[in-house]
Image (tube, rainbow, N blue to C red):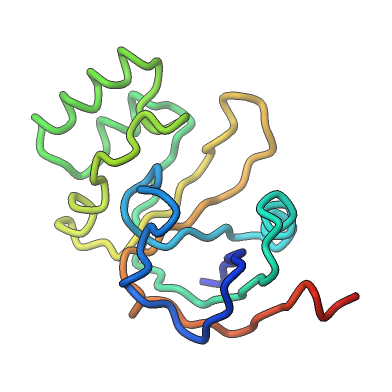
Amino acid sequence: MEVYHATNSKFEKFDNKFLNSRDEGYFGEGFYFVDELQHAWDIQRQLEARYLMTCDVTDNLYDLDLENDAAAIENFPAPEEVKAQMREIAEYNGTFFRSGSGEGFGLEKYLKAAGFAGVRVLNRLASVGLTNYVEVVVFDAKDIEITEIEDEESED
């Protein structure tokens, strides 16, 4: 699967020692990407990132559809006691998956245990009326190959 990653650091290979060097991530510890070039450009501008990387990542991704938080929690591959905690957070915050309510929850542990190498987040922003995009999180650097690096400064 082809995805895009904006960054200010130039490197030739993803390395697990840099997992979540910015924050814990809404969808677990991993490397974050978007699936469309236009969205990648938007994020690159927003972050004022110098580099835009095109990468191939594993297809072994869990599809997390956020059109309905309750259904996403019920279908999530985690033990019932974990889902109960997720529902409690969602009830308190009005959501579990959006606005960082589940940040630091360790979603990747449950997805890895279910055999997934990452997550493809669908309909993340649909409920708030913003431009929707697919976010992809890959849990291990071995599942990512950089195929191209664009340098924003060299294009002037």
